[in-house]
Image 1 (spheres, rainbow, N blue to C red):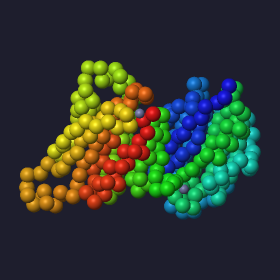
Image 2: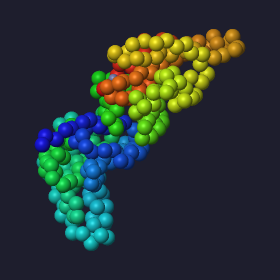
Image 3: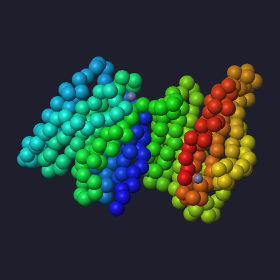
Image 4: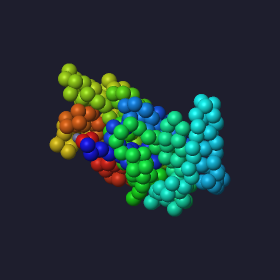
Length: 299
Ligand SMILES: [Zn+2]
Ligand SMILES: [Zn+2]
């Protein structure tokens, strides 16, 4: 059977992964973080990244890592066999080094350092049952690994939700629930929010899109006076909200007038999802920021 692959992306760390591996652990930010993906039985992929203050040697990073694994193996009374330099590479990195080890589980690893974003990434792929061999799977993941944005865009792809944001925007908070994913980004005072909710067909049975938004994101338009209109978007029914700051004082209004709010909510029947895109920014960036909605992929 041909294995299906999909894309994973978080804080500009992107790679291809088998489609049936699910994200089970996620923590950290751009400077330092960790994610783990499991198949139905066991952990299959771990990615750790860090932007060290000082330049570190990749060999020494792997030494440290192997030391930790050795300690764990000794504690569990497992024999550990380590191999350095597997000759697996990641083509987008000038500096990378591979390794493998085998105790009760077999793992292939890769450490990379990037001269552009100055991050050190350690990827470990664990053997599973059946399917492709560990080496083949690891080779594809390593080859597809990237750790910084391309063409001015950061790619985000998790839980089957894919979108891009301008590369200057950094994630400031996220709320990842089973039925709803919400990401908040910020750059120089501008805010960009992307949200996706599931089971749209059921949710919208007894309420309109507008009512759903009010219930799901009650403070979404706080401090703004908004106007609403219906509009078709990619052949989906959608609502557009445009807003300006709610201020009584004339002086404050004059000062804050350059800020705008733009929000689009749409129902994608094909993927059974509701997608939300909202941006608050300066008037002069309005056109460019509003266009970012095109970078949210619903189906
Ligand atoms: Zn990089
Ligand atoms: Zn769609």
